[in-house]
Length: 152
Image 1 (cartoon, rainbow, N blue to C red):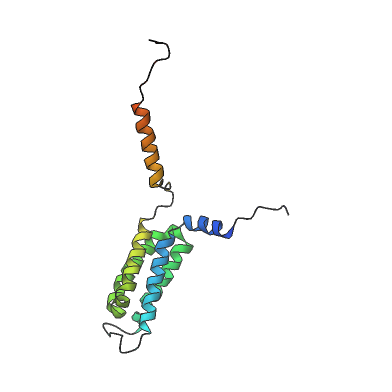
Image 2 (image 1 turned 90 degrees about the vertical axis):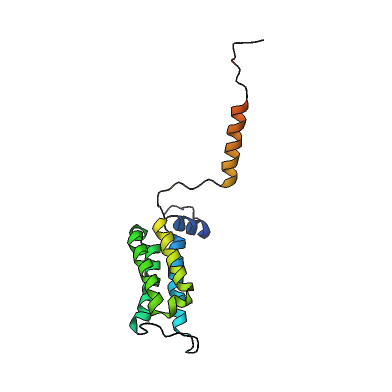
């Protein structure tokens, strides 16, 4: 078996992360996890609003699952993100006002990031690089152009 050059784990992770809506999926899963944690809060803190039965645990679990599915299967990101935003908004009624708003906001933001992610988009040039190119173009436009055949 020939020796293949092994990539550094950090570089391999960056390559994997670049091919999927990583931050959107992570925020959606974290929002669901936060709501699940607020479900376990003491009874003095928990507000009992809406259906506190199965739906109070089902919707945040679905948020975590959808966040993980976004990371594992990014081709179906549009379905997962629309479902994620609907489930996140549903936690407002079923799970302590969406985990005291924090889980709800994390879930909606993650779903929106996932929905807006484009897989084949060129990476944006950094601000310094864009400014450097613009300066170089301005300098080139200011230089007088002299024909090589004409001499004074």
